[in-house]
Length: 256
View 1 (cartoon, rainbow, N blue to C red):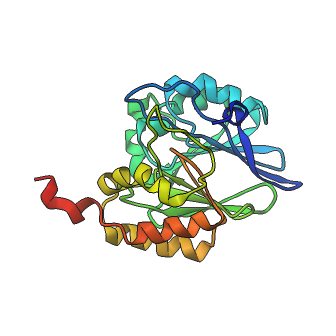
View 2 (view 1 turned 90 degrees about the vertical axis):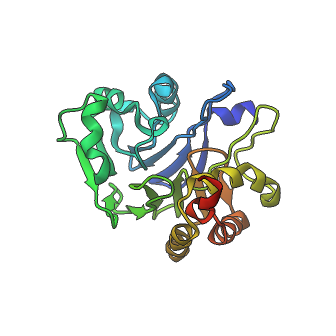
Protein backbone atom coordinates (compact mmCIF):
# COMPACT_ATOMS: atom_id res chain seq x y z
CA UNK A 1 0.00 0.00 0.00
CA UNK A 2 1.30 3.45 -0.89
CA UNK A 3 2.66 5.34 2.13
CA UNK A 4 0.45 8.33 1.35
CA UNK A 5 -2.63 6.11 1.48
CA UNK A 6 -1.86 5.05 5.04
CA UNK A 7 -2.51 8.69 6.01
CA UNK A 8 -6.13 8.50 4.84
CA UNK A 9 -8.14 9.07 1.70
CA UNK A 10 -11.37 10.94 0.88
CA UNK A 11 -13.81 8.49 -0.71
CA UNK A 12 -16.55 11.09 -1.32
CA UNK A 13 -16.67 14.87 -1.15
CA UNK A 14 -19.11 17.68 -1.92
CA UNK A 15 -19.53 21.20 -0.54
CA UNK A 16 -21.06 20.03 2.77
CA UNK A 17 -20.11 16.40 3.14
CA UNK A 18 -17.09 14.08 3.16
CA UNK A 19 -16.66 10.35 3.71
CA UNK A 20 -13.05 9.61 4.68
CA UNK A 21 -11.03 6.44 5.11
CA UNK A 22 -8.69 7.31 7.96
CA UNK A 23 -5.81 5.05 7.02
CA UNK A 24 -4.45 1.80 8.36
CA UNK A 25 -1.78 0.40 10.60
CA UNK A 26 1.61 0.61 8.96
CA UNK A 27 3.10 -2.07 11.22
CA UNK A 28 2.20 -5.69 10.56
CA UNK A 29 1.60 -7.58 13.81
CA UNK A 30 1.35 -11.35 13.41
CA UNK A 31 -1.87 -12.74 14.84
CA UNK A 32 -3.46 -9.31 15.37
CA UNK A 33 -6.64 -8.16 13.67
CA UNK A 34 -5.83 -5.13 11.52
CA UNK A 35 -8.64 -2.59 11.30
CA UNK A 36 -9.72 0.43 9.30
CA UNK A 37 -11.60 3.44 10.64
CA UNK A 38 -13.79 5.95 8.80
CA UNK A 39 -14.90 9.53 9.40
CA UNK A 40 -17.91 11.38 8.01
CA UNK A 41 -17.77 15.18 8.07
CA UNK A 42 -21.11 16.90 7.50
CA UNK A 43 -21.41 20.70 7.73
CA UNK A 44 -18.18 20.76 9.70
CA UNK A 45 -19.27 18.21 12.30
CA UNK A 46 -17.84 14.71 12.62
CA UNK A 47 -19.15 11.15 12.76
CA UNK A 48 -16.64 8.44 13.65
CA UNK A 49 -17.25 4.83 12.57
CA UNK A 50 -15.85 1.90 14.60
CA UNK A 51 -12.89 3.83 16.06
CA UNK A 52 -11.25 0.67 17.31
CA UNK A 53 -9.44 -0.66 20.33
CA UNK A 54 -7.38 0.90 23.08
CA UNK A 55 -4.03 0.23 21.40
CA UNK A 56 -5.10 2.23 18.32
CA UNK A 57 -6.60 5.17 20.19
CA UNK A 58 -3.72 7.64 19.81
CA UNK A 59 -3.24 6.69 16.15
CA UNK A 60 -6.92 7.24 15.33
CA UNK A 61 -6.96 10.58 17.21
CA UNK A 62 -4.03 11.70 15.07
CA UNK A 63 -5.75 10.50 11.88
CA UNK A 64 -9.00 12.29 12.73
CA UNK A 65 -7.10 15.49 13.54
CA UNK A 66 -5.77 15.67 9.99
CA UNK A 67 -9.33 16.37 8.83
CA UNK A 68 -11.27 17.85 11.75
CA UNK A 69 -10.79 18.95 15.35
CA UNK A 70 -11.61 16.06 17.69
CA UNK A 71 -13.96 18.30 19.72
CA UNK A 72 -16.18 18.56 16.62
CA UNK A 73 -17.03 14.86 16.66
CA UNK A 74 -20.70 14.70 17.60
CA UNK A 75 -21.48 11.04 16.85
CA UNK A 76 -19.68 7.71 17.18
CA UNK A 77 -21.19 4.60 15.59
CA UNK A 78 -20.26 1.09 16.66
CA UNK A 79 -21.30 -1.70 14.31
CA UNK A 80 -21.02 -4.31 17.07
CA UNK A 81 -19.28 -5.14 20.34
CA UNK A 82 -16.00 -6.81 19.37
CA UNK A 83 -12.93 -5.38 21.16
CA UNK A 84 -11.24 -4.40 17.87
CA UNK A 85 -14.30 -2.20 17.27
CA UNK A 86 -15.22 -0.85 20.68
CA UNK A 87 -12.65 -1.38 23.44
CA UNK A 88 -11.61 2.28 23.18
CA UNK A 89 -15.14 3.53 23.80
CA UNK A 90 -14.46 5.00 27.26
CA UNK A 91 -11.45 6.92 25.93
CA UNK A 92 -13.54 8.48 23.14
CA UNK A 93 -16.26 9.46 25.60
CA UNK A 94 -13.54 11.10 27.66
CA UNK A 95 -12.10 13.36 24.95
CA UNK A 96 -15.31 14.21 23.04
CA UNK A 97 -18.91 15.14 23.79
CA UNK A 98 -20.03 12.63 21.16
CA UNK A 99 -23.22 10.62 21.36
CA UNK A 100 -22.73 6.85 20.96
CA UNK A 101 -24.90 4.59 18.82
CA UNK A 102 -24.61 0.83 19.34
CA UNK A 103 -27.00 -2.12 19.21
CA UNK A 104 -29.37 -2.10 22.18
CA UNK A 105 -28.26 -5.70 22.74
CA UNK A 106 -24.84 -4.49 23.92
CA UNK A 107 -25.80 -1.63 26.26
CA UNK A 108 -25.92 -3.98 29.25
CA UNK A 109 -22.22 -4.77 28.71
CA UNK A 110 -21.07 -1.15 28.85
CA UNK A 111 -20.26 -1.23 32.61
CA UNK A 112 -17.55 -3.78 31.72
CA UNK A 113 -15.90 -1.00 29.68
CA UNK A 114 -16.03 1.25 32.75
CA UNK A 115 -19.11 3.16 31.57
CA UNK A 116 -21.89 3.83 34.09
CA UNK A 117 -23.38 7.01 32.61
CA UNK A 118 -25.67 6.07 29.71
CA UNK A 119 -26.87 9.62 29.00
CA UNK A 120 -24.74 9.84 25.85
CA UNK A 121 -25.63 6.41 24.52
CA UNK A 122 -28.48 5.27 22.26
CA UNK A 123 -29.30 1.61 21.79
CA UNK A 124 -30.16 0.92 18.16
CA UNK A 125 -33.37 -1.17 17.97
CA UNK A 126 -33.14 -4.49 16.14
CA UNK A 127 -34.87 -3.23 13.00
CA UNK A 128 -32.58 -0.22 12.75
CA UNK A 129 -33.07 3.54 12.81
CA UNK A 130 -31.98 6.74 11.07
CA UNK A 131 -29.44 9.21 12.44
CA UNK A 132 -29.90 12.81 11.18
CA UNK A 133 -26.98 14.93 10.02
CA UNK A 134 -26.61 18.75 10.17
CA UNK A 135 -27.07 19.07 6.39
CA UNK A 136 -30.49 17.42 6.58
CA UNK A 137 -29.21 14.16 5.16
CA UNK A 138 -29.41 10.91 7.14
CA UNK A 139 -27.42 7.83 8.00
CA UNK A 140 -29.39 4.60 8.18
CA UNK A 141 -28.56 1.77 10.56
CA UNK A 142 -29.10 -1.40 8.51
CA UNK A 143 -29.75 -4.66 10.41
CA UNK A 144 -26.84 -7.05 9.86
CA UNK A 145 -27.49 -9.44 12.71
CA UNK A 146 -25.53 -12.70 12.93
CA UNK A 147 -22.98 -11.34 10.43
CA UNK A 148 -21.22 -12.23 12.64
CA UNK A 149 -22.48 -10.60 15.84
CA UNK A 150 -26.06 -11.32 17.03
CA UNK A 151 -26.47 -7.56 17.30
CA UNK A 152 -24.73 -5.90 14.36
CA UNK A 153 -25.53 -2.99 12.04
CA UNK A 154 -24.14 -1.62 8.81
CA UNK A 155 -24.36 2.14 8.32
CA UNK A 156 -25.60 3.64 5.05
CA UNK A 157 -24.65 7.25 4.40
CA UNK A 158 -27.43 8.51 2.13
CA UNK A 159 -25.47 11.53 0.88
CA UNK A 160 -22.45 9.62 -0.42
CA UNK A 161 -24.28 6.30 -0.95
CA UNK A 162 -21.43 4.56 0.86
CA UNK A 163 -22.31 1.59 3.05
CA UNK A 164 -20.02 0.98 6.02
CA UNK A 165 -20.32 -2.79 6.45
CA UNK A 166 -18.34 -3.51 9.60
CA UNK A 167 -17.07 -7.08 9.43
CA UNK A 168 -19.00 -7.91 6.27
CA UNK A 169 -16.67 -7.95 3.28
CA UNK A 170 -13.62 -8.20 5.54
CA UNK A 171 -10.37 -9.48 4.04
CA UNK A 172 -7.44 -10.95 5.93
CA UNK A 173 -4.05 -10.12 4.43
CA UNK A 174 -0.92 -12.02 5.34
CA UNK A 175 2.41 -10.23 5.70
CA UNK A 176 3.69 -11.34 2.32
CA UNK A 177 0.54 -10.23 0.50
CA UNK A 178 0.24 -6.77 -1.03
CA UNK A 179 -2.49 -4.74 0.65
CA UNK A 180 -4.50 -2.26 -1.40
CA UNK A 181 -7.17 0.23 -0.38
CA UNK A 182 -9.43 -0.42 -3.39
CA UNK A 183 -10.03 -3.92 -4.74
CA UNK A 184 -8.82 -4.19 -8.31
CA UNK A 185 -9.50 -7.86 -9.15
CA UNK A 186 -12.41 -9.44 -7.27
CA UNK A 187 -11.56 -13.01 -8.26
CA UNK A 188 -8.08 -12.62 -6.77
CA UNK A 189 -9.64 -11.09 -3.66
CA UNK A 190 -11.92 -14.08 -2.95
CA UNK A 191 -9.22 -16.21 -1.22
CA UNK A 192 -8.69 -13.30 1.20
CA UNK A 193 -12.36 -13.08 2.19
CA UNK A 194 -13.73 -16.60 1.86
CA UNK A 195 -12.24 -18.32 4.96
CA UNK A 196 -13.40 -15.47 7.22
CA UNK A 197 -16.94 -15.36 5.83
CA UNK A 198 -17.39 -19.13 5.81
CA UNK A 199 -16.53 -19.34 9.51
CA UNK A 200 -17.89 -16.06 10.92
CA UNK A 201 -21.14 -15.50 9.02
CA UNK A 202 -24.04 -17.47 10.55
CA UNK A 203 -25.70 -19.03 7.49
CA UNK A 204 -26.54 -18.52 3.84
CA UNK A 205 -30.11 -17.60 4.84
CA UNK A 206 -28.80 -14.68 6.90
CA UNK A 207 -26.31 -13.36 4.34
CA UNK A 208 -28.85 -13.58 1.53
CA UNK A 209 -31.36 -11.57 3.57
CA UNK A 210 -28.72 -8.86 4.13
CA UNK A 211 -27.79 -8.79 0.43
CA UNK A 212 -31.45 -8.36 -0.55
CA UNK A 213 -31.73 -5.42 1.85
CA UNK A 214 -28.52 -3.80 0.63
CA UNK A 215 -29.47 -4.05 -3.03
CA UNK A 216 -32.51 -1.87 -2.33
CA UNK A 217 -30.12 0.84 -1.07
CA UNK A 218 -28.04 0.69 -4.27
CA UNK A 219 -24.73 1.66 -2.62
CA UNK A 220 -21.83 2.78 -4.82
CA UNK A 221 -19.15 1.75 -2.31
CA UNK A 222 -18.92 -0.93 0.38
CA UNK A 223 -16.45 0.06 3.10
CA UNK A 224 -15.60 -2.78 5.52
CA UNK A 225 -13.70 -2.52 8.80
CA UNK A 226 -10.96 -4.91 7.65
CA UNK A 227 -9.26 -5.46 4.32
CA UNK A 228 -10.10 -3.34 1.28
CA UNK A 229 -12.90 -1.21 -0.16
CA UNK A 230 -15.37 -2.36 -2.84
CA UNK A 231 -16.09 0.15 -5.62
CA UNK A 232 -17.73 0.14 -9.07
CA UNK A 233 -18.55 -3.38 -10.34
CA UNK A 234 -16.87 -4.95 -7.28
CA UNK A 235 -19.92 -3.98 -5.20
CA UNK A 236 -22.27 -6.22 -7.18
CA UNK A 237 -19.63 -8.93 -7.61
CA UNK A 238 -19.28 -9.15 -3.84
CA UNK A 239 -23.03 -9.10 -3.19
CA UNK A 240 -23.59 -11.85 -5.73
CA UNK A 241 -20.76 -13.95 -4.28
CA UNK A 242 -22.00 -13.49 -0.72
CA UNK A 243 -25.62 -14.32 -1.55
CA UNK A 244 -24.55 -17.77 -2.79
CA UNK A 245 -22.07 -18.49 0.01
CA UNK A 246 -22.56 -21.54 2.20
CA UNK A 247 -21.33 -20.54 5.65
CA UNK A 248 -21.72 -20.96 9.39
CA UNK A 249 -24.33 -23.56 10.32
CA UNK A 250 -24.45 -24.69 6.69
CA UNK A 251 -21.18 -26.47 7.59
CA UNK A 252 -22.21 -27.64 11.04
CA UNK A 253 -20.90 -31.18 10.56
CA UNK A 254 -17.36 -29.84 10.08
CA UNK A 255 -17.33 -28.38 13.59
CA UNK A 256 -18.79 -31.20 15.70
